[in-house]
Length: 441
Ligand SMILES: [Zn+2]
Image 1 (spheres, helix red, strand yellow):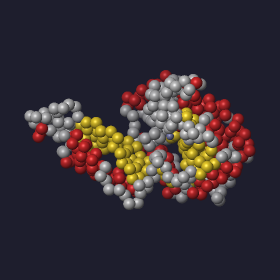
Image 2 (image 1 turned 90 degrees about the vertical axis):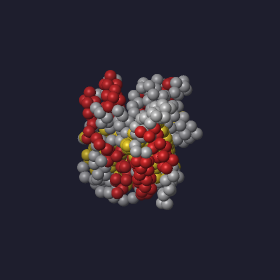
Image 3 (image 1 turned 90 degrees about the horizontal axis):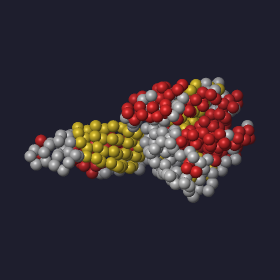
């Protein structure tokens, strides 16, 4: 059956490239992936998925982090409509309820969930004539928004995998959930899917990210048991009282002082003995004029930890400093959670299995990655949830030659990665659901 899979995946090549380019053209930011979600839902529906969830049934409303303003959400809706987003699904997406989950029920057996992220970045795509999307005419039609992290490739991999799994469904024993997750950038979306219960009862959860640099010469599946950092992103607003700087400074409440006090003390948080930690205040805005006591200040900051516990410690410590810095200067302090991820770890057994299937059954090159990752991924909410309930998780890298670097206006990837991704995900699901009982490995 793996021979058929290899052949069928390769036969999808033209179609996958076409699909990827379509998503690339319609790049949409987190929580506004409305055109994108409509197309995903349409495709899954037409393939014959047993259930296609959209709208409020995907993400729990209150658990969505870092939502754009109402105006931005409305503008995104209008834009999706004007670009012909499928009317059967579009109204579900109103107010930022993006993301799609496709479910295939194939009788008794384990449940496998695959996560594919779907959002783009606020980057103006380059006009460089050597950039493939310019050469081939599929650059983003949205000014200042670009798929510069390969999520257009991830969606396409998910849809290619969906198509083959439907084709092989008579060979599957169990349930497959394909989760097309909104708003991964800024780690804002995954938590709301977990809180809606979609990872309950999942035995295996997997995700992948395209990886590589301009120097990468190979195409391979990279696996390792490394981790991603837990993180919390916060916006903080201090509100004080404006006053004349010479006549009545004693009547003012200086929000800038509160913010400055907070910044200096945030960087003085003692380190945690059982995990690496990070803190960064990336932005501070305050004040209105030289001769006015400042009445408003805003901070944007993040903490990270190499364990969920050390990250929790950083978050709690930072919160205390933020609130008390406000109190010192008699200013109110409002903290808004903008994004968060848990510490992500791969399950050793499933990771070894993924490596083995890719190498020996699918004929893909496979490399072992070093432990430890520099970034954060909100997939960690899914992996932590599944692992806590006795399941296993694997996040792997779909390595290929990439132009430019990630989150850069020149970013592009070798589209062969689409086929490799489809082979890997489909092969793994076929193996895990070959029988009604869980395979031993
Ligand atoms: Zn990404």
